[in-house]
Amino acid sequence: MVVSIGLIVADHRYHHLGIVRSVLKVMTYPLQFAAHAPVAVGRWVGELWSNRGELQQQNLALDRENLTLKSRLQQLEALEAENMRLRDLLGSSLKIGERVLIAELQAVDLDPYRQRVVINKGSSSGVFVGQPVLDANAVMGQVVEVGPWTATVILITDATHSLPVQVNRNGLRSIAEGTGLANRLELAHLPYDADIREGDLLVTSGLGGVFPRGYPVGRVSAVKIESGKPFATAVITPAARLDRIREMLLVWTLSPEGLKDRRDPSAQAKAAP
Image 1 (tube, rainbow, N blue to C red):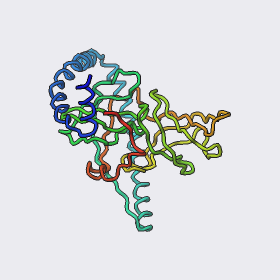
Image 2 (image 1 turned 90 degrees about the vertical axis):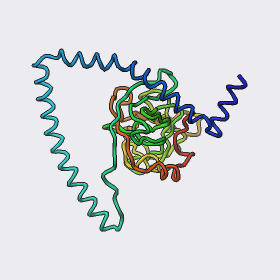
Image 3 (image 1 turned 180 degrees about the vertical axis):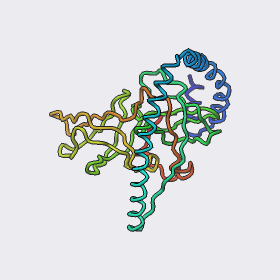
Image 4 (image 1 turned 30 degrees about the vertical axis):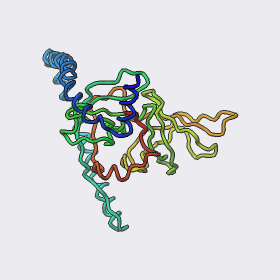
């Protein structure tokens, strides 16, 4: 027990075991790959047995969806061009074309008190600790551990995670805290007169420099005011499909060095090692 406690303290304070952890990740990667192989083989066999009619229907649906998305993309490109012209008039700059990388879910932490997943991209792909992770709808979480070929992502609903947000309607800033449940966040310590209501959209505020500003987080599903307590609590339903998504986006809004310089520990994820 003394040796174990000593190793935990040494790793937490001085990070002397990082190399050992990387070596262990390299050694266990074949086991992770072997555990994932039956799922991949089963999916491949299932696709082979799909009948021709189902494939034709899927192709038709995908063609229609592709046409719709192209139409929306044209509108977004026009809005982006308009925003750039307005920002130029105001003398500000707009960073566009953020670098992204698609990663696939490889494993899920089975601990009911932890909301973490393992993805199939690591330091060999440029992934770094603190990197924001999104899905097609909203923010999912951020990278907390990186190996050569895999990385661990803490989801925004983890009980140890906090995320700076603001109400899209009026700009009210707060901190969204994870509850350990895949479909619930909370805004605690809200004044009773705070202008927040059911249905409000929450977006990232950009404070702390980890998560880019303006990405959706979730919507207010309830505002609880309990007698005898000095603050109100807002319950948030995440917009990301945290319990169903298989693919996610790793975003490069900052370099690892820039992230380290701008990180604000009081407003970012409180992830245990």
